[in-house]
Structure formats: structure tokens, C-alpha cells
Amino acid sequence: MGNLMSPPVKSSLHRYAAIAMSQSRPISTINTDSRARRTMGVVFFTIIMDIVGFSIIFPLYPSMLTYYLGREGDSGILGALLGFLERFDSVAGGGVVVLFGGVLGSMYAILQFVGAPIFGAVSDRIGRKPILLFSLSGLAISYGLWIVAGQFWILLVARLVGGLMSSNISTATAVVADITTPDKRARGMAMVGMALGLGFMLGPALGGLAAGWDWAAQWPELERFGINPFSFPAALAAALAIINVMFVAFAFQETRDPSVAPSSVSRTANPIALFRTADYPGVSQTNWTYFIFLAAFSGMEFSITFLALERFGYGPRGIALMLLFAGVILAGMQGGYVRRMSGRIGPRRMAFHGLAFTIPGLVVVGSASQPWMAFAGLGLMAVGSAQVIPCLTALVSMYAAADDQGRILGVFRSLGSLARALGPLLACVIYWRLGGATAYYVVAVLMVVPLIMARYLPEPTPLASE
Image (cartoon, rainbow, N blue to C red; front, side):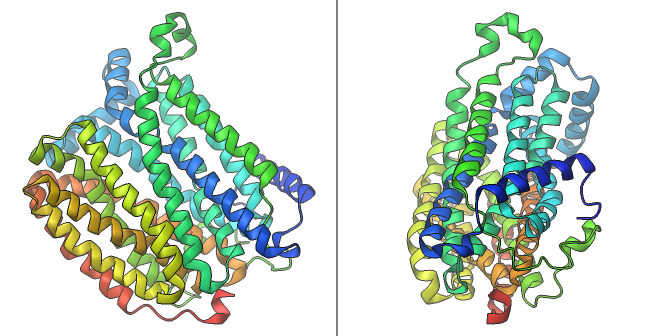
């Protein structure tokens, strides 16, 4: 691994690798079909638990800002952040509370951008299981810090650790690539997408319910140990991460074939080199297709709450209903249509179809004067995105060689994280300066770019995908 990670981190990873190797043989050596189905179930459960714990914090951002302002005022790190937000708000006009959540979320995503290709490359070298164990343990530690985050700087450190360790999704995706044949790759990635969708539906709902139990109010004497109004949601997230660690430790069988040597790029000590994809025709074009699509789409996700409030007077319950509606369609499409039909239609054509669905959906939402119109537009966008993300993921995996799956999928997920960091901030500027309708029309026009790029993606070759 060269100098990719510090000696303590490398020591921990090698310890996890030794444990993983002592517990199981690679999946390719035993009853592949039944083991693959079991492994897919483990990955599905792991991703859901991971995303639920990650997204528990989403509905808490406004209350968290109020809490830390009340305790610390506008001094220190929090004061510096607020100063930046106020300057940005003078341009975007989106409100400091909204931007506070956006910046914390963007910081998390940027760390995923940095960590995903590194974790993916290391998993190509030492195996998927040790990376999953290491990263999930790191997430548990980050949530533990959140439990005692009575000061803002502790919360910030917790989010920094959590953002880096959440790069494990790229490793979980590489597991799916390991256990699926090229013709079933999109089907496997649809299950990953379904798990992500379910996690993002359940997490915020659980966070909103958990926020009703304030440990600091019930036991004020614990505040000196850092217990705060959000300690119970943090404890739930930590518990889920610990369960996930135990589940992977005992139920997950290593999937990386040790007979396949990792690529020379995966062994490099230069982190910048990990982002190189020129050796695989189609990967760069797919990555940029995904990046532009997700930046535009995540901006829509971020701004839909403002549009629902502005046009229809929706409060948290109405907005949650809209997001749940879209989430149910997304999960249903990925678990049903995409999983069953991707092999017949092909991931290239299906990704193109999905992008084509999102454009009229954006126009309908942008022009919606009645709630049913917004729901109809959201439905079209959910149908579209349900096809785009798993199919583009499958294509990237099919373009890459077997010895480079972790790194290439890590780069793909990394660019997705960067898109999710930039998209909401850009959407905030466009929405509040030009209005909701114009923002959605702009995004609809922008979506034509990945549509054209997807139309001219090359056909995956058997050599690259097997």
C-alpha cells in the first residue's frame, strides 16, 4: 500500500485482514451460487443499516444550530462557520439554517470523495471484509463522539471521521461486482440502489422520532460529560453501526479472489493516481455522465422542500410524504423492474431511458401549480433515477478489469459524493436568485448533457468485465 495510510491505520487494516482470512475462504472457492445469494443479502442489510445511521441526523440540523448557538454564541469554530454562511447567504439568499445543514452535508460528501477511491484500492489489495470491518468500526466511533458532542468542535470531528469512514459504500459495491456475472451486474447494482433508497427513507424518519427523547433534559447532570439533546439519535446510529460490525464479522464471506493480483495502480503510493481511469474506455465518460446527472438531481432533492413550502404550504409532514412517495417508487422500480429487466434491455439502454424520464419530470415539477402535478413530476424523476444510478454503476464495473474493481468503483462513488457536495449549494443559489420554476427548467436543460453522453457510451467488452 506504500504510504497511502499512516502506520497505525495500516496496522489496524492488516489486523482486520488477518481476522477475515482466518475465518473464511474466498467466495469463489465454495458453492458460488448459494454463497453469492447469501452475500448479496448481507450487503443489502449492511448498506441499509449504514445509510439509516448516516441519515438519522438529517432532520436535526436546524435544532442543532439553535442548540450550539445557545451554548457557545458566535465565537470559535462555530462563529467562523456562521460568518462564512452569512456571506454566502448574501449571494444565495437561502437562509443560514438551511445552509448550515448543507455545509455539514457537503463536508461529509467531500470526505467521501477523498476516501472512496483509497478504500476501494486497498480493498483490491487486502480484501473487502477487512475494509468493511475497519470502516464500520470507524463509523461507530464517530457516532460515539456525537453522543458526547456537547461542544460544536466535537460534533465537527465526529462528522469528519464519519465522512471518511462512510466511503465503505464503494467497497460494498465492489462486493456486488465480485459476485455477479456481467449480464447480471445491473441487477446486482439495482439491489444496492434499493438498499440505499430504503436507508434514506428510514433514517430521517427514525431521527425525527428519536429527537423526542432529550437525555440532557431528563438527566441534566450528564451535560458535563457532553450529553446533549441529540445524544439519543446518536446512540441509535452508534448501535446500528456496532450491529453492522458484528454482522459483517460473522456473516460476511470474503469475495475478492486472492488468485487475481491487484492492479499496479491499486498498489501505488500516489493518491492522485487512484483517480486515473484512462486505461478503460468508457469509464471516464460514464463517470462524467454520473457526475453531471447526480449534481443536477441532488440539487433538485435539496430544493424540493423549499418549493413544497412556497407553493403548497407544506410543513414537515407534507414534505416527508412527498419524499416517501418518491422513495417508494424508487425502491419498487429498482427491486422490481430494473432487477428483472436490466439483463434483457441492457444497462446502456436502460440508463438512457432513465435519463429521458427525468427531463419531463423536472419540467412538470417546475411548472406545478397543484400538489398532484408535483407528485406526478416526482414520480417521473423517481422512475428515471431508479434506472440511471444502478445501470451506470454496472457499466463502470463492466468496463473495468477484475483486479481493479474496488478502485474504479471507488472513483465512481467518489465523484458521486463530490456531486452531492456541490449540487445542493449551486441549487440554493439558482433557486433563491431566479425562482423555483427557473431552477427546475435550468436543471432539465442541463440533464440533456448526460442524456447525450449516455447515448454514446461504448459497448462493454467481455475482457473488461470478466
